[in-house]
Length: 325
Image 1 (cartoon, rainbow, N blue to C red):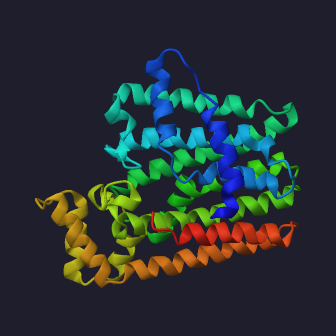
Image 2 (cartoon, rainbow, N blue to C red):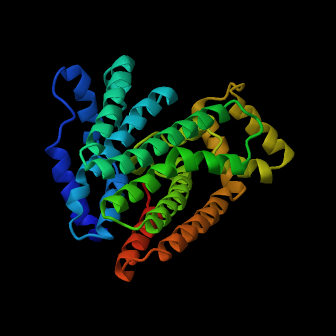
């Protein structure tokens, strides 16, 4: 993805020269740690791209890109606590490396710092950015609560699941693009189409993540393979399996995901993965993913931007949806 290098390099340089704070180190060191673990940086890249679609100088969006990346990592710190996860990007999660209390407080200060960065723009622009950001942040919390509720709910539908990942994952990608577009003085209609582009891309992106969680390689994914199965996450793969399974398979799946099984985690992951494979739910997920990708691209084509820049975003979508990690 060489075409992303200008954005990656610019954001990397900015990130290396930016600290959330210094003292006390026990508060800020965990934030520096989670930010140093890397990741795809797709969200800050989308902010910069959103601006560059309309202005040559995308560097003016670096503060907002940083705000989005800090916010995203704040959500990961708190999500890992709720999921009791031990690994993030192949390294210890913040609460495991430090402590749960430190992780909670560090996450809080990261959230506050995100707002401070957005307030650095002009009063009119910062008001628009904070409005988009606040709506996104609340919707993300709703999505996270839905995700936790699904663990104990028996009547989760595929539609429920798609709505949950829209709120928990996709709204952040949509907001990143919209914030970047607003900084680039895009028309309101374009900003909204880019938001919808990000939403649909985000749903496809999460479906791909669900597939990789089960069928990816641990070294690539950077976290425990089958983590969603262990956590009883009712992903698209699980819900589609319930639709297609025999009575015996369905009964076993429900029992395993209820937590009322003596099967070891390793055996559970192996059995569920074999069931998913036999029912071809990976292939169904890929079809749905492609449908959301196409919907995203249709919103992009409604924007009044240069064809070459549209192709840039289309390439980004295809590259991320064909990734192995």
